[in-house]
Amino acid sequence: MKLEKITSLHGRRYEDACGTALGLEILGERWALLVVRELMLGPKRFGDLRASLPGLSANVLTQRLEGLEAAGVLGRRRLAPPASVQVYELTPWGLEAEPIIQAMGRWAARSPDHDATLPLSPVGLMLSFRTMFDPGKAGAARTALGFGFGAESFVVRVADGLLTAARAEPEGVEAVVTGTPEAVAAAVYGPAPERLEGLTVAGEAAAFVRFTGWFELPPKAERRAA
Image (cartoon, rainbow, N blue to C red; front, top):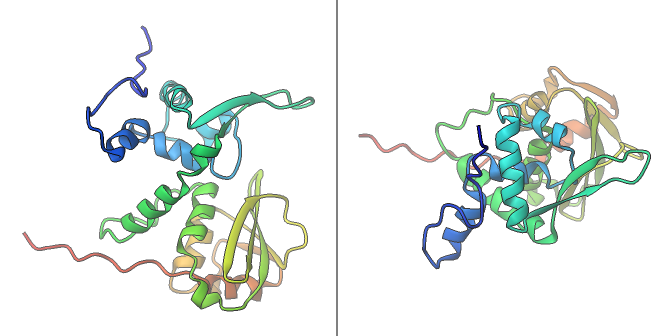
């Protein structure tokens, strides 16, 4: 059976000159924006993308990658030996989509239907930190924390009211937090971070507990009665 390419800059068109319409043509297909999200912190192999988006089939992922590449959002390259594997990475223009992801995440978190207990990818968690960080709560505080999720490691730094999150080995940090992304999210956004349930903290656990106080989810929108 022939594989139908349903994501393409020249496929489903709105025939509308508004940039929003073109943005939806590029990123509006199911899974497309989540593929972009997973590449925000650096390149990934095809298999790594599938692992981070377990509900996405190989066929659909292939379609999305081809469509996003055709639109100029991402590209592919082969790593130098000894790795010699093909990876996908966002173009400089593709990286400019992060504010879109942040704005959508902040807006959707206000929905009464938002279920914070659903699975969360490590990159999704890191981007949530970059989205929900409140510099007013952090003040002049400075910290560097490592996070480990299986084979993936990240370093989050806070300084001068800014938060950065990058894929890196946790060196020179105050603490290293290991567990699932869901458990870390529960500690950061939940009501009782001091319990640190389901997490292991090596180093200064108090540094991570302080860190959990520097985020605030937006208030829930009211659901209008029918």
